[in-house]
Length: 150
Image (cartoon, rainbow, N blue to C red):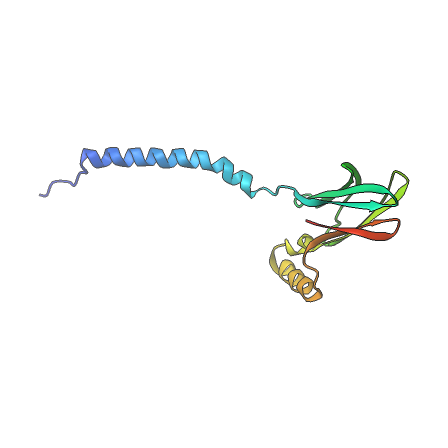
């Protein structure tokens, strides 16, 4: 009768050491992988314009997971809103220091980010219309003064 097969002790020790290293690496990397999968806010590059002798700096932040958009003038959040379900457009209006400030926004990622057939069809339609980016035209006094890209 043949003797049962046994592994040398040195191989068993190496296996245990490698298993511990892999477990340690996974424990260290798992939180960073989870953090990377979350959607951080997208921030528009700030743009400066001069309107009627007033220097205005426009900026904005879009939170994809909540589909919320906040636009700021000189660092003050002035325009804020949420994209309705399955709607890539958002029109915002407000006043800032006596001036009418508004924004007409089109965010292709609101629809293009959807999964399945809806996302595929929406993406194809947007590309066909030439409107696949995330953009806000900022108006002061009813005139377009700048465009913010996210």
